[in-house]
Amino acid sequence: MIILAGGESRRFGSNKLLADWQGRPLIQAVVERCRAIGPPIVVVKSRGQFVLSDVQVVEDGQVEHHAFGGLLAGLRACPTERAFVCGGDMPLVNLQLARYLASFPEEAVVPIWQSIPQPLCAIYSRTCIAEMERGGDLSLQKLLLRLKTRFIDEADVARLDPQGLSFGDVDTAADLARLASR
Image (cartoon, rainbow, N blue to C red):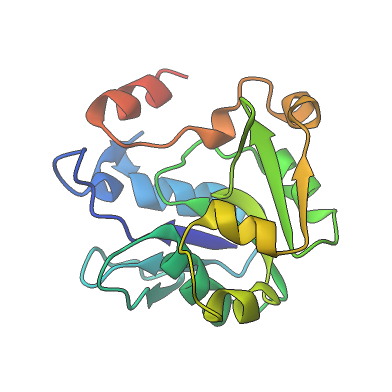
């Protein structure tokens, strides 16, 4: 399990990962939810963002924080061959969906929601590291085209997560309020 928590929270106005989510910091709520998927959990953060004492935390080592660099750092630190990856601002990840994605053998297993691939709620193999280290475009969408990727049809995703709550992330205070009301 890799939780990407390296963003700068520009649109939120403060560190969104420390915002209150049902009585605890958002990042802690995501960690607790993901714990049910199973250990180990690796949280990838930018320098000095926050402290978590009960999981492995690694810094992404990037000057500009982006999901590509966070994923690469997470895969390098991950002790398992494959990992479910989500954002630290995604408190409603559906655990059944995560397990379903993990049932496929490809290097990357990515759900489609609203006709868009969702690379921040997906399974990645450590075999992706070699392709990522080749450099080039830092877009996860373009990386998926270079990997052995299985895209999971939206109808299959909807059977497990009918409202697509797994893909809800917090960019603004309004997003936080909207997701909390779910």
